[in-house]
Length: 247
Ligand SMILES: [Zn+2]
Ligand SMILES: [Zn+2]
Image (tube, rainbow, N blue to C red; front, side, top):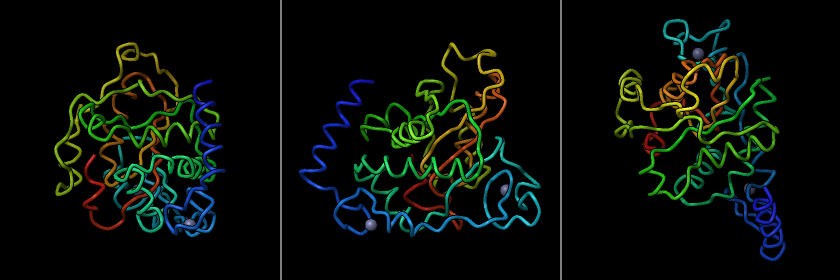
């Protein structure tokens, strides 16, 4: 889109005049410096084939053996710790939208590393009310950046959120799943078999129990999608973080 190109050229000019600062270590010259990017500790295999978390003895972790996620799988570079933790908070709550560029690159890197395959990239939609409060959807910014890196088509209107779930922080995985049932719907022209055989990649910042991604995947599978994968920046491994439970 020409508008985007103009915007990016303008940004490049601003970067020359006022070099950006690393969101993590404050060094001058990059939105997220190479040193901080290199300090991200990636999950080490073997990873569960479904949830993508480490510690799977064979192909599936204990949880997925009993109650697998209701989608093809989820992948993330690493757990919810520094520097990802601060970066996600800065992108989500402190208005540092430009972090979506290096973080989208990180997602694209994970896509290749985990040999994921998709025909279409979509963000987890934000409820209209939340969108108005925050002014932007951080997942959409990440999806835009990631899809551009991967040269995959992006859709921001395939599904929409029809009700906003109450705060999820204190809920168990099962309660979260119940809370989010029917929270997302395909837009009208995608309700029938229009997604037949498509492989869809849903982008979000964080995945805690997987309930949000499962709720997004349900209408996509119903519309004929062959595979629905989730790709997020980080997975909290112990407990539920108080700041990312809200959406
Ligand atoms: Zn840095
Ligand atoms: Zn698993």
